[in-house]
Amino acid sequence: MTENPITRRTVLTIGGASATAIALAACSPSGGSAPSSSASRSAAAPSTSAVPSAEASAPAGGGTEIAKLADIPVGGSIDAKLNGAPILVSQPTAGTVVAFSAICTHQGCIVAAAGKEFDCPCHNSSYDAATGEVLGGPAPKPLPKVAVSISGDAVIAS
Image (cartoon, rainbow, N blue to C red; front, side, top):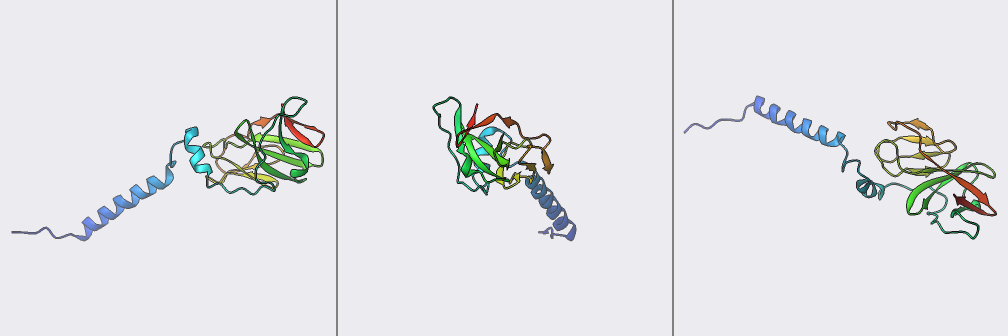
């Protein structure tokens, strides 16, 4: 009976194959880019908004109220929802409000409000909170705008 001893070459081959498999797994998306997988990835997304999350409601004058103007710091931003979809609302200057979809244009993760910018926790894309333009990271396009206006003390999505 002859046993085949494990050689250094065998150990290195197995180790190299294992390292390659781990590297490929780490570089691939963890659940695809389907919208259903973004919800599970967004659960761990940090929220740095000044207000936990503004839920939309219907004001008397039409449109959908997404936040109170006083809840959005001047020069800052908040996370909100419009008809259940995540959005980001920013007040770059006093009395000027803009809003954007919170779905990252890279792989569909939920982007979080972070003061003067919006940050994607999945692959570190960042966006300008005043314009939605990409500041850095792999995101290929700016965030889509959401039409908003101010009515009294409320921010209304039309």
